[in-house]
Structures are given as C-alpha cells and as structure tokens.
Image (cartoon, rainbow, N blue to C red; front, side, top):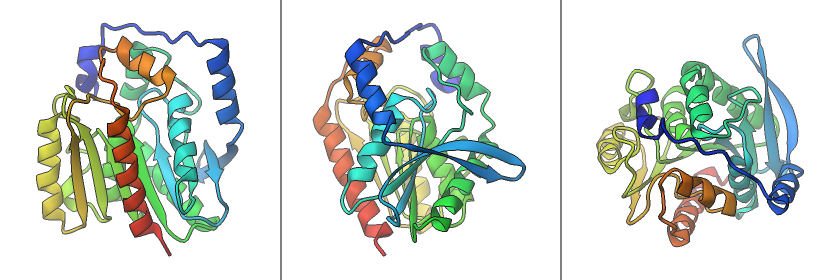
Length: 266
C-alpha cells in the first residue's frame, strides 16, 4: 500500500495544537465509551458513542489512527437523524501518526486481512449489543477497508466509503454484498487508490455486483475533503491540499445520511 502515498513521503508535518484545540479534542473524547472487543485470541480497544439500541455504524480510521478527526466523524454520525451508535475499532492498537512519515509507517505495517477481522468483530459486537442493523463507513485507508469489508464481512447492511479503493489482492468490489455508496474528490491525486480514474473503475465494478450503489465525485476538491475541522484543514494544507469546500462535505454528509437511513431503518 505504500505506493499510494509515495507523493507524500518527503513531507514532514507535525501538528502543533493550541490550547483551545486541546480543549476541543478533550471534550470530543469525553463523549466516547472505551470498550474491548475480542476476535480469535486477540482483544482490541474500540470507542463507542451514540444512542443505545440504535442502528450501529462501524467508523474506520484514516492512516493517522484513532485521532481527533475520526472521532469528530463518529460523533457527528451518532447525532444524525434518526440517531446511531457509532463504533471506532482501534486498528493500530493505540498508535497514532502525528506526521505523514509516521502515518505511512503505521499503514504499511497494518495487517489488512486482520483489520477486516477487527471490523467483522465490531459488526458482531454492535449486533449483540442492541443494533438490529449495522453499517460500515471509513475514510482514506478506512474507505478502502469499508469496500473490502462489504465483500468479506457477512452481516453488513449498508456501507459508505470515502476516497479509497482496496487492492485487488484483498477484495474485488464486483463482489460486494451490501448496498454501497462511495465519495471521491475530482482533484484527488492518489493514483490507483482514490483518483478519479480509480473512482470510475470502482463504479464499473459495482455495476457488476448487482447491489444498489452510488459513486459521487465532487468537483474542485482533493483527498480527505471531509476533514473540515480547523485542525484538519491545517493538516491538509501542510500536505499540499489547499482546497477548502465545506459545501462539498455537507453534500456528502447529506448523501451519507440518506443512504444509511434508507438501509439501516428497522
């Protein structure tokens, strides 16, 4: 997977948090319950927020790890109508990349089939703890894992993937087994992973699956356009992504909400 982000390998971006941002992140974190989930002979941490007995959504991290932005997304998801229980599995087992080089190293070291097993265990946990239906969503690396899970994990009722396609040796999107929606930025330059060519190739694969699907491409935006927090915008700029289009993110959220409501309502 390292070739996907080769263009970023020489960038060193370390986020310097202001006191106010530390407070914001602290407040967001306090909304989550930390739990432990077991699969095979492994136990891993996960973070849960939202309504008890609501439909569940597994929220899969970017290459950074379980950081402020993925928790922002999960918190927002939990508050969307009609209300959801959002669960973030910690695929990196507590590690977080603070700059591009660290994130690259963590993603390169990820056991991708093992991550799919973590997602399976997370889906099972939600269904065993009050969620009649469960969706999966993810961003960047998590978007690719969302699509892979839609192929490999039974029991997923809907999926929404943001700017990421799995490598063919992991999963073939033509074999997805759940309704799936996917979002990409027109200016995304991660060739073969989330650029517009990859988006179009994914669309052709999903046509062959026989499942309901949507593929949306947003004009004028690059990779990770859903990261609209002040800290997320700063980090994207440090990586050369100078687009700032909150309207695109809001449209994507609206489509996300409609999709999940359609397929996760009891």
